[in-house]
Length: 263
Image 1: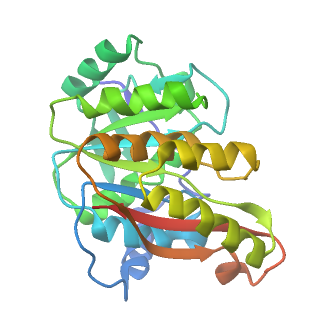
Image 2: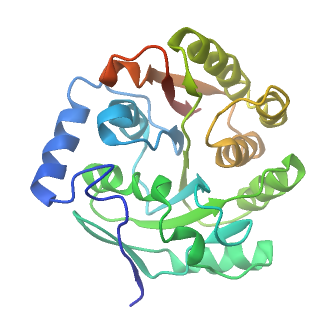
């Protein structure tokens, strides 16, 4: 068994099982019931900053046998599209198996090989898994890190995933504006979110690139939005928005977080 070891435990979230379970419990407190969906966008900052927003995403996620998790690349390592070659991923809450059948179908369609390098120190997929473990008992995952940023290539990936026959859900891991005053960040983020809500993958991508927005999640969000457009979804819906100012009190330099579901 080839297991991917956690790299963010002890920094982004607790490394001890009991502490992690307690924190997850607190993050879901007072999160209202959400309409269920197979596709969501969830943030990937430290749980103390973005965990409450993430809880809104996962409260909306319906149970499924496999969760495909799309992330940006923070390390710059590995190929443009990297599908994890591990057989399981570890967290303090236990091990989660990979859907190797779905992986082989996707690798064949895209024409690439599975890879480990991009996933060694990439936190943005890992942070989603404890939320899944909190919500569901039996499931598999398919972690995919996307460094590619050209719209035409992201569009192709979304279209390829849309043609896969397996029953799976998708989580796009992404944070929004970085290191700007809260008013500016909130305004920019909501303008970009409107594009997502309209399933305008190209419009979202163009806005981020042309205005040089500091949204960390351009690639996975574009791919998921394109996938939803191709598979019969009608709209995205902002479930919750927050910034790091809620946790830090610093309103001069914030990071934005959005929970978005697709319906």
